[in-house]
Image (tube, rainbow, N blue to C red; front, side, top):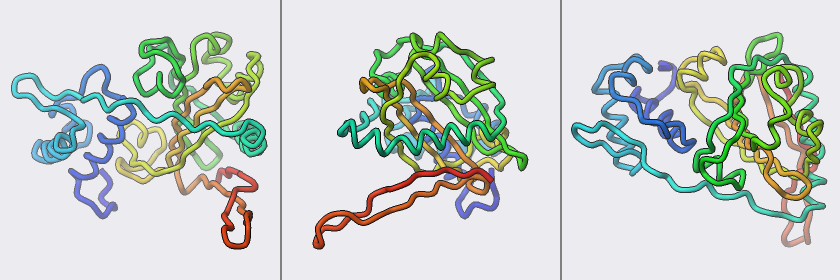
Length: 265
């Protein structure tokens, strides 16, 4: 765990596990106390405090003799629908920029496999839980080192035209276009997350370090979800820049985005 963070070790573990629970990472079973002790390098009492916090919030159930299990957190909210023309106009610059940045970085494909969609992935991609999707995990780097840890989910009927070799050579948005998909709009959220053991290793940061977290749901021109992306970025090597302008009447002016760009360092 990161000693530089102004919080206790158990709270760091709680935050990491809470984020993983919301992502549906424990559909195949929640790790035991011993496994968590080894993963985070802490004592049993520290792990138990973190688990007690998760249990008090209804995220896990702890049953004597049966261990710990993740509880169903429900479906993720669907991305809002907007006017197609306006969404397309806002999206163009972002997608072009993402492809450009993808071409300027090197990529290491860690994993590509066909998996069954979890409840959250199925909801995002408007599939049924258990439907096949391609899950791909990649790490992008610049000359300075690793920048991002990206996990993408694509419906199997679309992803059948590309695999590990293609993902190592081209940005996934390019591969989608080459597969005959016409990219339409996207819904994106940006927040923060703490690095878990796996991500920390790949991004060369301490466990518990703060990362920029991006969630992006991409639709085709028929408004079908075609890609669900979870991205984690090192804030010291990545910045997201947005240009804003004022619109509206004099008594109700609001800020709207005019240009979007992402920069790697």
